[in-house]
Image (cartoon, rainbow, N blue to C red; front, side, top):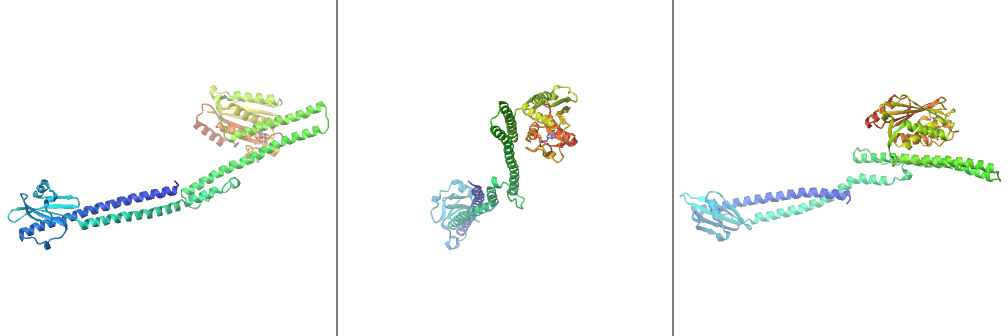
Length: 472
Ligand code: ADP
């Protein structure tokens, strides 16, 4: 059931209930009024009849109000009928209690079918007491009551129909902006993701909805564009080594070669394949990072051990790299060296930073320094290499961004983007300070295992506020 029908039904139900309540109350009150009015007339008839009979000795019908099927009976105080007009009183089966009440001075009334009966007590001047009972059928009262019931019934039904139509139109009018938003949203697709919904000038819930939807589109567009550029950058990075390999194979095949020449060619191809494998692994990791590293498993990791391992793996790969690790001073308890994290991801992050330091400095040397702040560990990786121009600093954490100044050195621009994702998923922060020609320092802050979330947030803010570094 759509909202329009539901609103119409609700509206109809509400107004219908109010109408029903109103009609029932009017009908009930009018029927009470009729009854009281008619009993009053019956009492007048009973009293007038007994008075005429007592004072004048006879009852002339012309002196009395005429009621439908009327009947008047006068009894003495013993219950003997003295006078009767109309149908015999026995038909009405008046109870002794009825007469008792009359004798006590009350004016009781009874209703048998459509006929109503009242009794009055009449003491004459000589001290005799008479009981006069008048009964009749209220033809006009009941016909008016029937008429009123029909008016209320048809009037109510008519109102209900009008309310249903008005409710349907009203709901359609109220929901028109929603329908317009739906129409607008339906026109947005991947080809025109830059399009936005018109918010309008009102400050109502629908404007809020449109604004929220536009913000969602902004986020989606950003993700969509970065996804597109990711694919095009990745294809470009993959094409380069493939072109190099194809060129090498074609040149080698131009003429018959000696075994050593083939070996040299294969070595070159092997280097390119290794390079491609590194690139593809980096791309996979970056894709995983973009989805927030699903299946991430954090364990207690000793950061000093992790750095030693990173150092040994790197120097094993590149023997000319010099990675020096230094501690400010060791913490008192071992727990201050432990962080909660994914060991292999953290290895990737620190190896990237150490490798960059060595790669982008002529002496291929970096200094890694560990220092211990309350509830967090700070690692700085410094080199005295080429440095990064200030204009490039804001972009170096973006995927595939490479500084022009280091274009001649092998790389794909994936490492820092991945490193930043890894540090952030560990609730840490990374920032960089660089002076072209003098060197670069990356600073990583990670919360220790014992740190509570509040102090992690506070510490991150404090680092950002006191740092001369570029925080990413
Ligand atoms: P890659 O090193 O593969 O190019 P990265 O994402 O690791 O990719 O680095 C991005 C860019 O940042 C590098 O191309 C380089 O220009 C710059 N960069 C990173 N680290 C350093 C450093 N220690 N010294 C100088 N430039 C650096």
